[in-house]
Structures are given as structure tokens and as C-alpha cells.
Amino acid sequence: MPGPVFVENDHLQLHTIEEEDIEFRQGAANHPEIRRYAAGDVPVSRPGIRDHTDDDVVKLLAYDGDTRLGVVSLAPIHERRGWANLGFWIHPDHWGEGYATEAARLVVTHGFEAFRLHRIGAVAHAPNVASQRVLEKLGFVHEGTKRDDDFVDTVAS
Image (cartoon, rainbow, N blue to C red; front, side, top):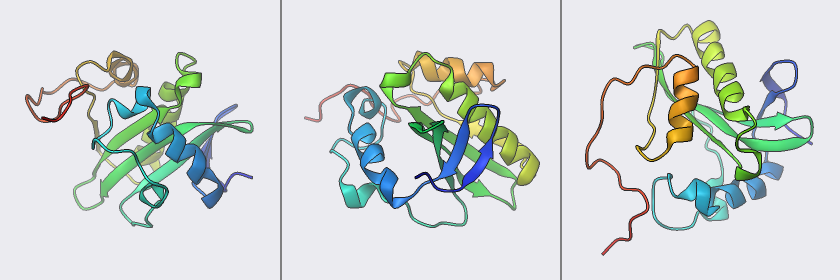
């Protein structure tokens, strides 16, 4: 059973993440299509996937009915400065169905309305065109490129 609904629309719900969601999150975090854009180069362990209860983080699991789709987050949230960073991933089984855009839109709207944020930023790796499209659909503007900041699809020497 999913955790309590945090925010929802007509068919997508963003729930709190519960213990029963750990296996799904670990499996997705280690999926090669998700992992290629994730930080770190080692598989994510079960203890490593557990959420920490930080006041400056909103991390939610997106559902369509009973189907787990992925995670969307605002982290960290800097209340004094009025900004946060958006993060999201959807399991590859549900790519191309609009869930990333919809989940991100829900949490961004919530951030502006409930937390009174005035700025939400996001980062997408250069080869991750799908994430860039999500951000464009939400009205994000490309403000800069960090060169040699993070590497994707590379093997450490």
C-alpha cells in the first residue's frame, strides 16, 4: 500500500516514500538506463537507498493508480533564499508516457505555492535529451553549461 498522498491531479499521485517502496527504488536506481545519468559509479545498496528525514528535502514516489512510476524531488530546499533543485526519474518501462513531465509539474507547482519558492533549478546531463525536454515543457530556461563537472557513460581508469 502506498504512503499518504502528498499531492495529486486527476490520474497521478505523489506519495510519501515508505519501506515497501525500497525494493522498487533500488531496482530502478540500479537499472542501466537510469544509472547512466546518476551520480556515483557503484550499484546502490539497500541501505543506501533508504530516505533520510531531512527538513530540506521533498522526495516523493509517483504512482498512476497502483503502479509505481518513479521519484520526483525538491532537494535541497533553501527556505531563507527561496529556492530548490528539482530532480526526477521514471522507470524505463514508463518512458515516453508523459509521467516525468506531469510529476515534475506537480512538485514544481507545489514548491511555488506551498513553500513560496521564487526559484527552482534543475540539472540535466548533455546526452539526456528526454530530461531536457521535460524541463523545457515546464518553462525552465537554460542558464549555463558546466563543462567537465560530471561524466556519463565513462569508465574510470
